[in-house]
Length: 135
Image 1: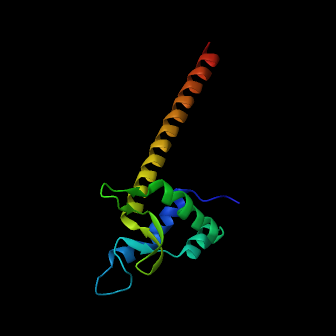
Image 2 (image 1 turned 135 degrees about the vertical axis):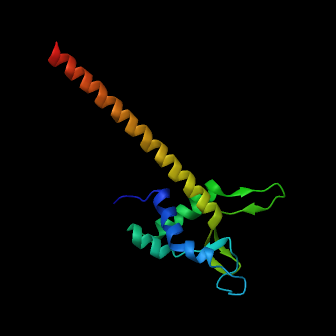
Image 3 (image 1 turned 90 degrees about the vertical axis):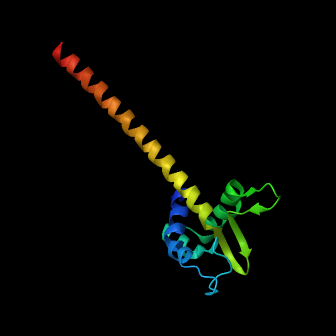
């Protein structure tokens, strides 16, 4: 079974919750905070075909550790939290969007490098074949 990447997990969270993030209203009271959006771990796990504890662990033990940070005033900006304002399993949506953009940019850079490397190999092989056949 293939383990989903951070890019896959975060993309799915972003796609499932973008509308909810944008439609937040203080008067609506559908959630406690605009920035921290509750996510459906079971739904994400189902889509990615893994056990929900894999997704939870990835968010809680890995991504929270990697992307949360302490501000100069000593307060923390969490990437993922178990509970904020009564909302369970929440992600800092603007931070998630930034991390996701960085992961996509890195993926695109790697894909471009791979393309140019393969292109260089094809040119080299073509030159070698032309030289062998021509000489």
